[in-house]
Length: 220
Image 1 (cartoon, one colour):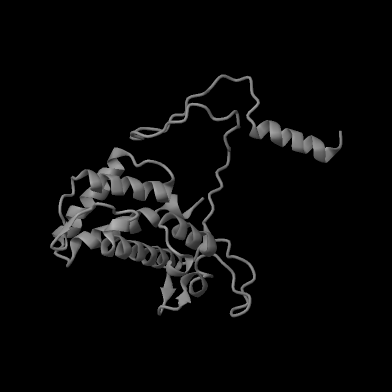
Image 2 (cartoon, rainbow, N blue to C red):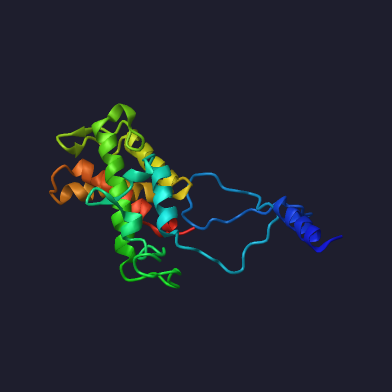
C-alpha cells in the first residue's frame, strides 16, 4: 500500500471511531448542570496537550456576525466607517503588511488585545441589543424580554432565562449551567442598583459582553 493511502486509511479509522472499547462516560466536573452530556467519545484518544488558539480578527468578527445574526459590516466600525478588524487587526493577532510591515502574527497577545476584543464585542452586542429593543417583533436574542420605564420588568421571567440560554448557546455552543444563568440574571439587578439610565438595555449589553468576551468565546 502506498504511504499516502496508508495514512489516509489510518485517519479514516480514527475519525470514524473504530474501536473495540466500550462507551466511556465523560465527567464534566462538578456544577456542570443540565444540558446534553455526551456518553461516548467516538473512540478518539483525548489530546494530551491542549492547544487553545486565539480566534484573531477575521474569525472573531465573522463568529460575532454569525452568532448575533448581524451583517459582517455591522459588527464593529470605528468612526462609523473603518472596520475594527482592520483598525485593531494587529492587536487582535492579525497581520498588516502594507501599512506597518507586519508579515507574521505575534507569538503572544499584546497589551492592547483585551481592549480590542472588548471594543469589537461590545460594538457587536450594542448593535444586536439596539435591533432587539427597537424592533421587538423581530428580536433575535432578547425576544419577549419586557422593559418598563427603561428597567427590566421581571428578571425572574421565563423570557429572561430563555434569552440567557440563547446568548450562551450562541457564544459557547452549549447550554448554560444553572449557576451561569443565575449569574447573568443577577447581573440585571446589579446594573439597576448602580442607578444607570436605562438599566434594562445596559444589562442586555453587559450580559452580551460578558458572554462573548469570555475565554470560552474568544478561543477555539
